[in-house]
Image 1 (cartoon, protein in one colour):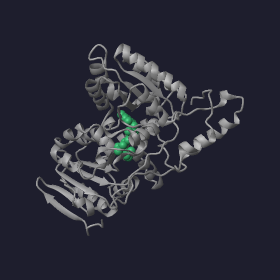
Image 2 (image 1 turned 180 degrees about the horizontal axis):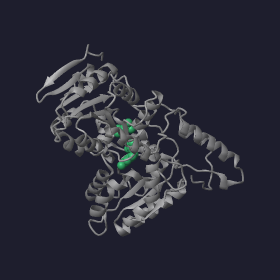
Image 3 (image 1 turned 60 degrees about the vertical axis):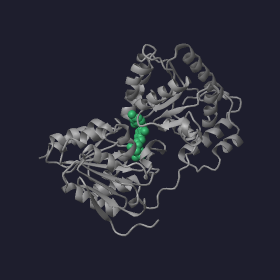
Image 4 (image 1 turned 180 degrees about the vertical axis):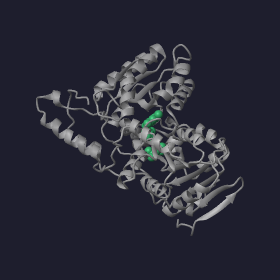
Length: 459
Ligand SMILES: Cc1ncc(C[n+]2csc(CCOP(=O)(O)OP(=O)(O)O)c2C)c(N)n1
């Protein structure tokens, strides 16, 4: 459908403003090396099918060549778990319900489940804690053993429901926790992941949850699943697998076509926002690629990084960090650059922001409808017909809400929102996707914090 002429501002009650456009105007707005058999090349190619050659896929193919060269030295062969086979193995032990929050180390398995599990057997949850609760409900209704997948960063989010719901001393609910082990000791990773990775086994031990690394070959994984099954039957409690990087072979998520009105990526949108801020405006940006793209944009413009607090972890807490800053710095404009998955993870924060009456709070949600940074699994916000950040923000008390899709609309909205009484929300609807050569911040989190605090101290 063609775009509907120039931008149209529509004033709805309660001083909420929408940008209305095209199709959307009709929307009701409101390494582990393991000895074992190498896969034959033909098998490899069959698994990869017609998928394009991403870096991961190339590494996988190269590894298969090395495996073929290993000859008698089978201890040099490196295995991979095929997502489809692991899924079938789960079904074989009676685990047929999956829910969780996606993780990059689990992305191939998550992609397989997203694409192949029946709709009523898979939920991409708002937060890992929610996932444990959904899995508990599934167990209550069926008596069966569900699987919850999560990145180890999400362990913090599950601690309460694990201790007060699934614990054998409370309701005693069995489930498998499939945990992506970011920051696994001995592997290169970002500071926040190294902290979490080191603490992960100890946290599980403190929670009383038995665990083992998920073997990266089929027979080993099958054996591990049997161990989990027997434990769950005997103890009626959670059992965990720690998934090391590159355990799974590539599986590509098929992405549906984006609405034709969407013209920008997250990075394009971020650049337009930054280009329309003033010298003293403050930015707090969300977990994932957004903050990495922002860091690189500042480098490319020779701007320095002091204006930005890059929330490298703490997914979903960006707006709360921004709120804490905005309360103490009423003369500064505070721009919270958020992601749809991040907002949804701790959406309760919007209530606090909405009720804060902070004139200087400017919330920008870049909605690509996906957990793009960890593999592109869909979020609920990708349903543009039925899900509206604007309506949620209005209900929470934000004074003004706007939606934009084109660079011109974004630029206009950012200029306008600077002068508006907050809290204000701007949702930017974008395409998924990122640059292949995206790097990581080269300043440490502590350096980032110190630069940012100096910048905030300016009057
Ligand atoms: C508590 C927690 N759970 C999961 C993750 C893994 N993770 C990092 S970024 C991300 C996706 C964020 O999605 P969104 O906010 O929509 O931003 P996008 O990546 O699409 O730009 C996830 C799930 C995490 N860092 N922390």
